[in-house]
Amino acid sequence: MNASTQAVSISAMSKISSIPVLFRSEFPAAIVDLSPWTMDEETQQQTDPNSLDFAFSFSQWHPLLNCGCVLLQIYFTEPLSERNTSFYGIEASGYGFRGEYWQFSSTSNWQFNGKLLPSGTSQQQLMDICYKLHALFGQTASLPY
Image 1 (cartoon, rainbow, N blue to C red):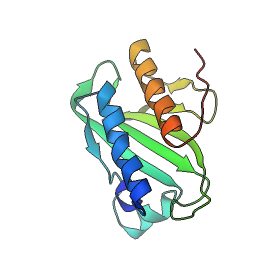
Image 2 (image 1 turned 30 degrees about the horizontal axis):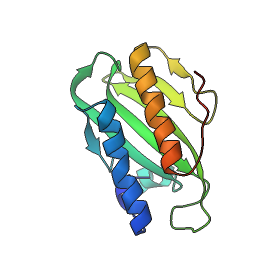
Image 3 (image 1 turned 90 degrees about the horizontal axis):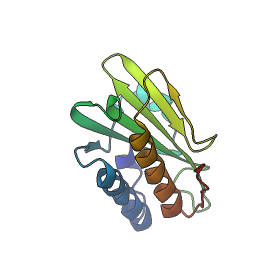
Image 4 (image 1 turned 60 degrees about the horizontal axis):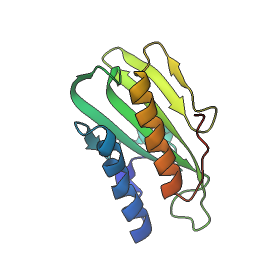
């Protein structure tokens, strides 16, 4: 679900605003979109109400990320409006004009998959961002390196 609609408390708002800062600390040229999904009914029915979704785009193709846009989705067990919600994990995907090029998930094996993967350095940067996001939401994560 669009991150812009998930700011249901001061705590949630603070954490949501930290996410672009973390991403841009590694990829300063990124332009953040807190509302990557259109607000039409059909699209909203397909989004996960238990997620914070961000799009980070670049003014041109990012050669080290091998994409022009990164979709970052942070998942929870319940909607953020619920007091007992728990952090679940993160998924990231790299997109360009021809669709999705790569995927990454912290809920499985912390591996990148796809037809055009980011460089090794960029993979490390993305995993570091995910590790910091796990810590931000109170979940420890062991990285595979």
